Amino acid sequence: MSCELMVFDPIKAPVDKTSFMSWYGEQTKWSEDHSYSGIKVSLEALQRFYEELVLTFPSMNVDDDVLKRWKKRERIID
Image 1 (cartoon, rainbow, N blue to C red):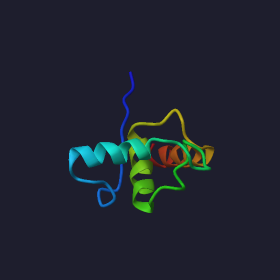
Image 2 (cartoon, rainbow, N blue to C red; image 1 turned 45 degrees about the vertical axis):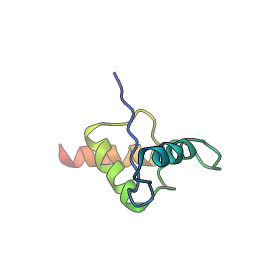
Image 3 (cartoon, rainbow, N blue to C red; image 1 turned 90 degrees about the vertical axis):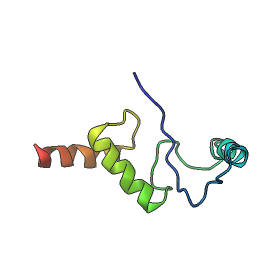
Image 4 (cartoon, rainbow, N blue to C red; image 1 turned 180 degrees about the vertical axis):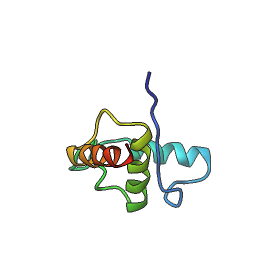
C-alpha cells in the first residue's frame, strides 16, 4: 500500500479552496528542467522535512545521494 503526500510552503499556497486548487494544478504540471524525484530544488526547510520523513518511511524513489545518507543514518542509529 502507498499514499501520496503533498508538502508545500504554506506561505506560497492560497488559502481559499478555489485558488488553492488552481495553484495545485499549476504546481503538479511538470514543466521544469529537473528530476521529479530530486529534492535539491525544494526549499531548505522542505528538504530537511523530507530527510526526516524518509528515516521512518523510506522512499522507493529517491536520488542515490539521499539513499546513501539514509543508509548511513540507519547504521548510526542501530
